[in-house]
Image (cartoon, rainbow, N blue to C red):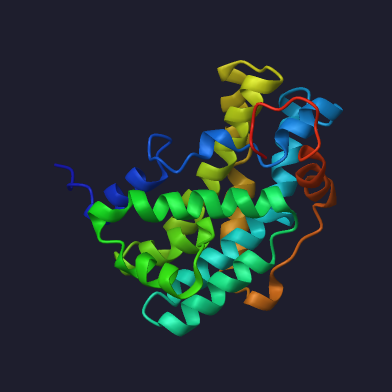
Length: 225
């Protein structure tokens, strides 16, 4: 006889589902430019690109922010400081718009589960970055920090793969192969963030940051970043 699923896990699954209305499908996190420039052209190059973003770019920083927001959900002043830092560290206009757009949408959509921790935060700082929103909500609702971090990184990677499947184009099987190959990177990035401080935020995924900047002036665009 199996045990029933924990309510907290069901909430996390709902919040990170592609059907949850955060608008993630509209953002490619620079993948659109990477495809246009030829950096991403097949499963191998896509896997390498996202691996770098996870381990050395926004994925790493978001994991740190999420964990600290999770721990600070009961401390409004500390949580506000983390939220402000998250906005200040966005390396480009579209990157900031991406995290703010999804973070604010997450706050609105999470209302049925009591998102008071986010509405109170928004009253203090205005816009909320996506990893801060997910981390604070997960902490408030008793969802484990480790599972929340790993699942959010997995959802992030899956969204970038979904964009590439449409842009390259790649088949669904190729996209799933990339997601499977990224599992060790996702797990390692989530694990490494456990002991990192806010001073550790930063990265060396320069090509990804350049993609965020150059996408703003790309001639044709299907995605918002």
